[in-house]
Image (cartoon, rainbow, N blue to C red; front, side, top):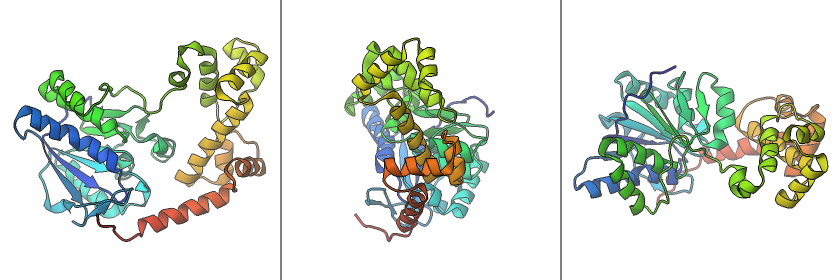
Length: 335
């Protein structure tokens, strides 16, 4: 395991933009630094946008952001890899060489959204804890078993600072700024950005079911948690009700009332959604995807998948790969 966090360095930051990066994650990381400078009355933090070739880079929404050629910029205290859609399709050779060069001179490395995938691809997250957007979590764990991916908002481990994306970079930066200048400044920044509260690195990415249901339905929450933990080897409704401690009929009533669904249908949809993620974000064979999600045969899986998503899994994967290739080869869009 990597050493514990020795103190994050943020003063001079580079943001390496990867094609189709998440613009909201990038902006959420930069804005706390800007507001910190304004409140401090001096430019304590500096930042620069980078690209591998010095050309503008398209965000996932089509807006192009200018970037200085990475090899000609710096030095930096921290460089964040800004990922987003189709991170797996990024040109890896030059990117890996640049990141490994930064690591060799002890630059702190970070990531936003799916940027952790690219750090892992470069071999720079082995034996580290890391955070990645939840949409990429399952496939990242499958592909990089030596990386300890979590579903927390952000992770700090040694000289690695990784963040799940979305608006979570605000919370990450506020935490790091508070270590430089105290919690009072971070609270002021939080108010300036109209954030309700500053979330910690132990906050989870996805809103738990209990947040939707409140605290009045602990049995239902417990049942769904058991389902989510047993996707590969589904448990029966009788077993589920036994573990939760209520009758089968009571459990069925809870699902119908609060989730508008019978328990086994809800369970099936959980398994199918996980299957879809594995199908689109890993190269696992379809039969292996089926087994990983509790389906006894490939034909049964294909039928359930087609009934739910409208097309067979093989066609879904083929369409996804085609769309990804088209996006990766799309000409730049100028803002």
